[in-house]
Length: 103
Image 1 (cartoon, rainbow, N blue to C red):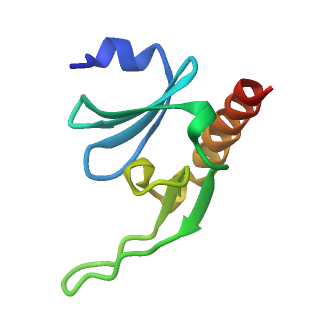
Image 2 (tube, rainbow, N blue to C red):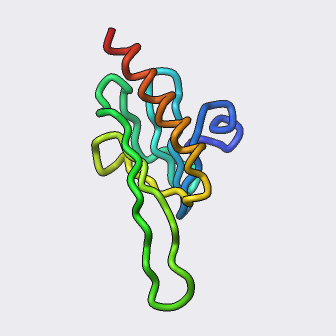
């Protein structure tokens, strides 16, 4: 299990529903509830994508959010629309690591 101190030392993107992505050297970690759920070598990822994916609710306000992913469903997390700049910076960092791993 990955502790909060370990995750804090990595480049990470916090998402909704206790989810996060963390770039750990040559690996992308998919974290939920503070524990690693999946680990993917960055060389196996597809280019990052950011898609507007609002969630309508029956009661209360709709969630304005973005879906961030790297090809596989397991790599998807959702982040608040207000964090778009952080999401774009994280995707750029992972894409740069992916390109470096490919060369």
